[in-house]
Amino acid sequence: MSAAAVSAPESDCSPGTPLYGEILEFLYREADLLDCNRFSDWLALFTEDIRYHMPVRTTQVLSSGAGFQQMAFFDDNIHSLRTRVRRLETDTAWAETPPSRTRHFVSNVLAAAAAGAGEYAVTVNFMLTRSRGDQGYQLFTGRREDTLRRDSAGQLRIARRRILIDQTVITATNLSVLF
Amino acid sequence: MSTIVRELDVPSDSGSPFTRLANGEQLEAIVRPAEGIVSRRIFADPEVFAMEQERIFGRAWFFLGHESEIANKGDVVTRQCGMDPVLLLRDDAGVVRAFLNSCRHRGMRLCRTDRDNLRLFRCPYHGWSYNTNGELLAAAGEHHYGEGELDRGALGLIPVARLGSYHGLVFGTWDSNAPSLEQWLGDMRWYMDIIFGRTGEIEFVGVPQIWEVDCSWKFATDNFTDNFHVFYTHQSLVELGMLPTDPDFASHGHMVTLDNGHILHFVQGPPDDAYRGLGLPKELWPLFDKHLSPAQAKIAQTHGYSAGTMWPNFHWLQLITAGDTQAPPIGILNLRLEIPITPTRTRMYSWFAIDKDASHDYRKLSYETYVRTFGPAGIFDQDDMENWEECTAVARGPAAKRYSLHHKMGLNRAPDPKWPGPGIGYQDSYGEMTHRAWYAEWLRQMSRPSALAAGRAAR
Image (tube, rainbow over all chains, first blue to last red; front, side):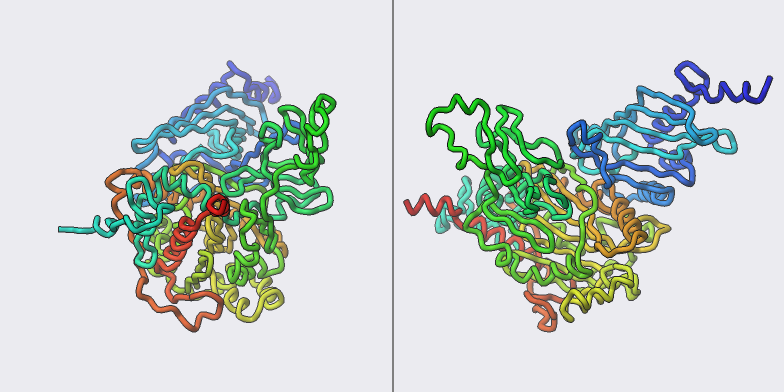
């Protein structure tokens, strides 16, 4: 069998393939870590060169584009993500002390081989529910565009995350939860 | 036995009906700024909120946006002037204008996007269209109108009563009897020069972050002149080494109260050049002398932080912070606006601004630092909203409403005659003089009959 034939299945990540199943399981496990407040374990899923980015969305007419602007709610690198997680692990980050109860739902998962070696472009719809204290739910929905990269140990990691939130005006106390 | 409840329990039969609440209480009895007494009732009570509509949101000067947000002819952004939706635009001749965002026919909202570039505004309902000067160009089915039925000249878009700008910050008011913007800002302009004119010009970057919080607009406003919450509210960042461990760290400076309720702080940071010059890179410091008076330049040079409120609900935050535990501290300029929606819900606007002459590298680092620390996801800011919501939630209770909040810090502190700027300066930035000055203006405005009511009384 030629080398090309061996690598061919590895780039096919259409639904039903083993690779699609692996990506899906990765996304589910990631969501579970967040919902179980295992933030340090969640952080370990990111590459050192991560850009974790949620641009601000504006309402525009269709012909003006999707409305994502040169401003962001999140624009993190690995250091600022680590700082967020370390902060959540103090008992004085009042926005999350006591913590939110979150459910991260991911669906409509599509994956394709990306330009970089061992990289996959993965898009999902997300829904994040947040219940905190005795208050009603806060709801966040949107599209997420991830680049997953296989590391030297063969594990998938998140190398880029672009979070395209549906709301232009965030109807929530704050964005102290993670996406 | 504690008699704290008595402090609000003042006989009210002598007060004006104009400031009397349905339960018989007088606003001036339950809000006594000179004594540091502010009733919790004014924060979540629908009756007080209804009174604020005309008396505050119908006539103060409000921040609408910065000219850099509408740089080109035909650029428009949709904003609020007080609580009313407005179009802020640059017309075909390059003139900045603001109109009620509403067609003159049925009142339909005319522009339903956040920003656009338009030559004309056409109403989706019946097709009435207006040019960027606000003139009605055409109404639907004009040939069906008889003689005198459609006075096109009188049906232009409704402009804000007065519009003005200072350092590119555009303000509008619905009160045609309001003082000019210059008069209303008064001595605040001297301090705005330092924040917005220190290197020539500043510009707003991108669009505002906007979010809605279940809080009284006044709790948010109160927080933007409050330096001593920083150590406690943002305790997590002290733990991470991103803030000093000395609880008094943000007290080393001055606060200033001015006419018309404008208030501000200038605070020195740790004795390090990174915490001087408002956190701007040193190559920009020589511009202070070029654009500011010697006294203004000295304030810019020797201070790191500043917070100011242009009464009632627009604030600057000039801060120095790191974006994460590994990054260097750097200056950020954040502009904040609170738009009330209900007594207990408020729409927050947060903008990032930067000096036009800033280098690419400084611009990038300042932006990243801002996004990571401020706005709804900012590791500083998100804890503030927790306070505003919980203070508001508790203030809804009928028992809580009988009690005052406590705004007495520095009640007996004498002004510092050596403060080099206009207004009344106080040494030690931990104090509630600026809070009290804000509530004093609130009470003054709430006690002042509107022009409309005065006109009605005259008839």
